[in-house]
Image: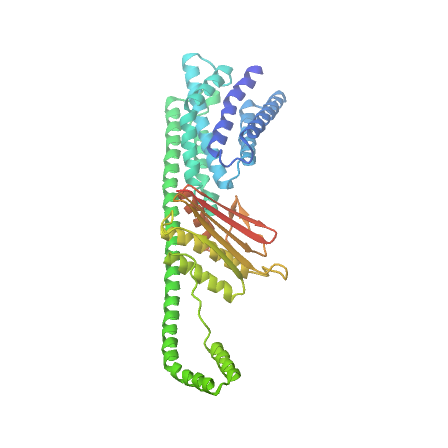
Length: 433
């Protein structure tokens, strides 16, 4: 019984290392707390394993109990989409099945040990130690590549790929516990594992292309928005030119009236006439927030929209003539932030008598290396979150603003964070290219 206990411990404990290391950035707890959880869970599983063996159950079937038990632990430890967790979990199971088969072949061929001996468990543990660096590195790269874009619908079915490989390994490559595994079956397991790596590689390529497409769509939307702003400003400029021509034509008539009032010394009549003239021809105030024409057009566009909607709009811009990131990317960032803020203020009752709706934007560039952007705005309803990411309330096919902001922040070695608290939504972006 002790030999079986050590065999199971040496064969299952490496799973926890491979399971947690690739998700080190997505762990729900600190590394030390995670390690204590893993040790406690492993000890509980081994005690349950021994209890069921002593109760007369077959060790072959009791070992399969580790699959759901460790799957539950994996979900409790990692904060990621359930489909992604299943994909990597089954991937690691496939790898361990290959390692256990290889360890048993070595022990049986060289020393004649059976599958449940502690020596077979030790060889399994040593094989895992020899390959854990490369596997952890490959798994980490897979996790980072596959999690670069949130695609819940994709992960709902993607986990079926490693699940099918697991079934093939268990059903069609021999029963290693009975000692009937052959070299051909072992090679088949290796080939299936290689197929899983190839599948992961192609999935990463697919997601990278999807990420590039999302960024291209965001840039296209930003450019279309900028073109629309320029068209609006051109129309406004034309109307002002016409108004100026009419004003110059009418100015002679106004001058005669003013001259007549001055000759008669009628100051009250002159004041009344000038007041009526000012009401009929209000002065225009062109907003200038920064020296960059494209960014100033974006800011002016949303400032006009906020003003027409009765939303208080405060802007603090401190940028150099040469931003730290390309102009188009900066337009995408500011455009998405302001569009989301404006939508939130206009949705529901986003303000009260004591707190009217507002948008506050601050963009500060430090030297030539750092840019920080913050946007605070009233928001009546708390947004929906999924795996620390905002879920869009817009129709399907749109609403990729926050995801685009995150991708640009990651591209320039920065971070994007979003928080809702007490009726106010806080968005902050830090770029450090």
